[in-house]
Image (cartoon, rainbow, N blue to C red; front, top):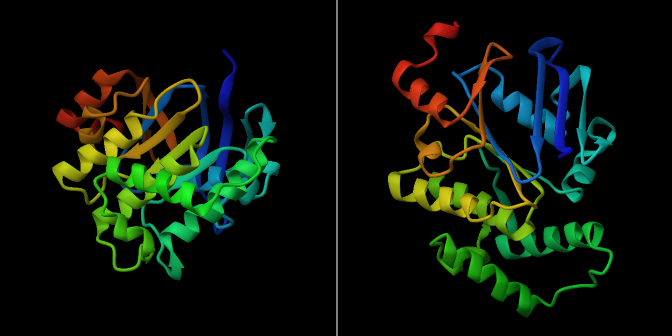
Amino acid sequence: MASLLSITNLHISIDEKEIIHGISLDIKAGEVHAIMGPNGSGKSTLVNALAGHPKYAVTKGSVTFQGKDLLKLAPHTRAQAGMFLAMQYPKEIAGVSLRSFLLAAYKAQMSERDPAFKTVSPVRFQKMLEEQMHMLHMDVAFAERSVNKGFSGGEKKKSEILQMRVLKPLLALLDETDSGLDVDALKTVAEGVESMRGPSFSALIVTHYARILQHIVPDRIHVMVQGKIVESGGKELAQRLEKEGYSKYI
């Protein structure tokens, strides 16, 4: 099976300081991969660069997404092609309701990805949005509030997963989505991701801890230390890291 995302010898710098030192990684359609590692290992740098954040400069290597050169695409074009980034620290957007934000994003995505897509009525979209909010145990009143404004940490993370479920990306990049969540919120967020698994959904999960991987079992786990992938394996690797930590790699 051809790779959905193929990363070859990727080097990434911030302010001319190299953070990622030659990473190679392949994710096939329908696969879920996890990257684990200590703070400062480059995990967030990788997913932000893949999403096209201008702060991160790719200095060497290649990335293809659906067989196309990802690095030549603008950030919004990457999103329209089916790539989604759930941020480690979700941004607040004052004056823009979550419902309006998602309706605009949904129309922009679908118009590019589905040639047969015409439009969606606000009433139909509201029904779809509320169904997804109920699934995530979110009060539907949040849809009328400004994006992430006044949301708790857990509510912001649920809002990110809500956006992912509405936009239905081909590849979700989940950057520390489990951080700051209590046990119940973690399970809800994990179920929101897990229930999307299938041939048309893949994910790359960035995390420090194995606890989210108790609810989402990845096909492959990669250990990243000091900007390099130092080991890859199955779910047993996460269990070992939970017991032993990362000291053996440093």
